[in-house]
Amino acid sequence: MTPKALVITGRVTRPDVSALCAELESLLYDPEGRVRDPDVGVDCDVGGVVQADLVLVEAVARLGLVARRAGGRRLRLRNVPPDLQHLLDLVGLADAVGLGEQG
Image (cartoon, rainbow, N blue to C red; front, side, top):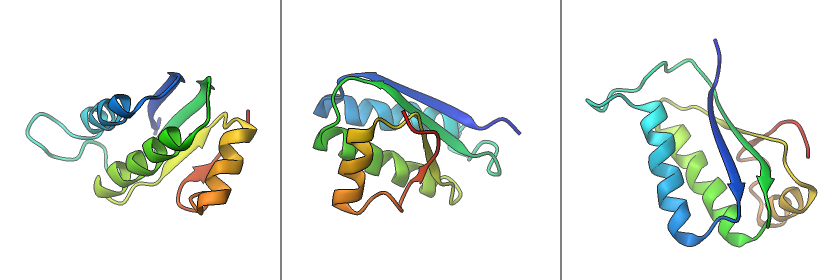
């Protein structure tokens, strides 16, 4: 099965975090609030971000929670820039999300 995919580009600001979570929820839940395709993974491509900072780390953490709440799915990051990888390691979130292809 093809994983659900979310692409993050540009600079993530605090208001973007809630919008990204809502976007992921719309991919994972139908209009009645039922989980869609519970056996399908969730990929998040972060290769297009321009600044890895703690706001982006917060976004990744919250997206991971949204994914887990939708049937225990794990968020898998793709194209992770080295500076984001270092921040995730620093705050202890590298193991909380799956780290796929590195940027």
